[in-house]
Image 1 (tube, rainbow, N blue to C red):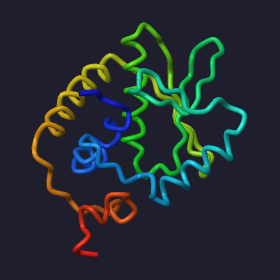
Image 2: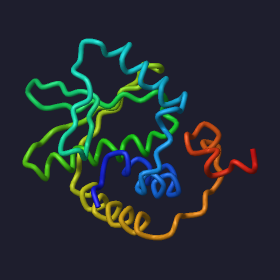
Image 3: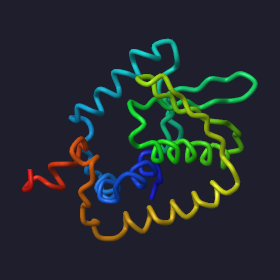
Image 4: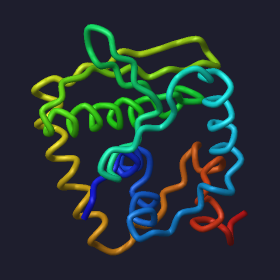
Length: 165
C-alpha cells in the first residue's frame, strides 16, 4: 500500500477519514473548504511553481531552492496544525529516503504566519510507527466515526453522520 502525505495528515485528523480515503472513497472535490484552500493557494502564491508530485506519493505545494531546498505547504488555518506538521515531516522523510535533504515551511497566509519544520532522528522513528499504524487501519474494518468539533466542516461529514444532521 502506498503511503501518501494525505494519508499521514488524515491519520492525525480522523481514522475513519483515513480508512475511507485509503479505500478510494474521496469526497474532497466538492467540498467548499477544500476549494477555498485551493483559491488561497492560487491567489497568494501566483509566482511560485505549483504542486510538485513525486512518485505519485507526495505532492508539495511549491519548492524554493537557495543554499538549501525548502518545501512549502500552504494551509488555510492552523486548526489542524499537528496534521500539517506531520504531513510536512513525511515529505522530508520521504525525500531523505531518496537521498535528498531538505527543510520545510508551512505557510498560513490568512494569519500571516509560517512554521519551519526540520526532520529530527526522533521524528523518523515516530514516522515508522505512524506508517505501520496507517497500514493497520487501512487493512482493518472501517473505524467508527468519532464526532469532534472539526467534523462539521469535513467533506466526509454526511457520509459519517448523515442520519444525525
